[in-house]
Length: 474
Ligand code: PHE
Image (cartoon, rainbow, N blue to C red; front, side):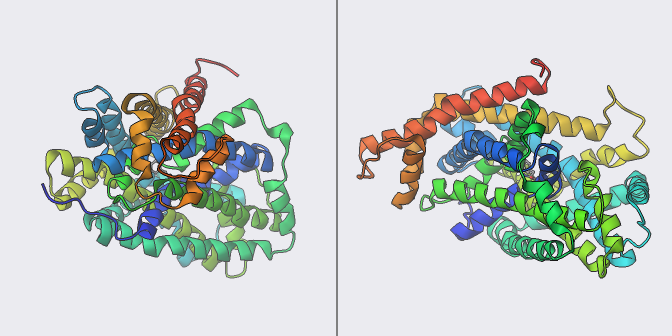
């Protein structure tokens, strides 16, 4: 078998993984769910969700990936040959197909809006209602919807086609800094507008009365989607790591970047919303309906609008390539496809699977199952079912089946730096043992992370899941 390609640098790996995590979830969804669920109060709950499921599961995925040097299916097989846990791997590949198929449709919209910004400056988006009508006619136009979905998938294919170093890593190193720069510009612009502070207040001042038990579930679910967990993206990216890299600090850094960008996205959006006298009535329409109406009124609105949708498009693209890489790596490792064929072929399959989603807002909008269009069904299936189930399987597999002892052994490769292991021990309130290699130390690491992974994460995922499927009602 060919030697497995590895990341060229730790930075490249971190930027690629952060690129997967930072996506539509951060820039489009996080700001509006935060606005709806009590601002700062919700942020606190979200941080808790990340701590109890985000960090433990991400670390578990990296461990499985690096140890096995395989795609999700191959990874389960390598660590527990012949067991039925491999279903977790297959579920991951299937989830990759499904999420990318509809994610690319929305990615396509962002491309379309970039063009609209440049060509029209959103001049005819005179009010939120009018903007909503324009949005409706854009997404319901079958030609546009499919064309932009096609272009977006094409871009993802072009990057993944080139492989890890020359494709994913190279582009992440260009696109991720671009995200920071654009976001920074937008925040400065937003904050410098008159009346901006009201937006900051709305966004971040904690309102505990708006924080309901449901907010906690929203936070748990969002943690999964936002961190790209539960389907093996991080297993796959981890499989291109060498033993030198420190898994624990990598996971913390990636989670940190993802959370920071989500918070900053709100700071780029809400100050402008308030400064221009719009109602935040946050919600899914925020980005496509309210913002264009704001750009229409701003001086140089075409430029700000272009930058905003470019930001959204880049964030979506770096997530899309990770989804495609999961699918591609499976066909390369397990079925011995070459990379180029696998990328183009399965990219095309995903494009086709996405066509009904692209048409769900127009010609296919009448075809629904209990009120849900094809797009909604795909989204609901993947985000509310497959990701949590996949995450549940990963945490049980590493926590109980393969075992945290093996896992900690793997984590120790590359964790020569002491600070990180200290952190884990501190978090648990345990006494640290200064000799890194002592069994006590391993025990400490295993027990802290292990407790999360064996008990807290799966239980939290399970309870959240029961609520989602309506088995328990709030
Ligand atoms: N994390 C991405 C976002 O926030 C979405 C994603 C989910 C990507 C699952 C890969 C896997 O938009």
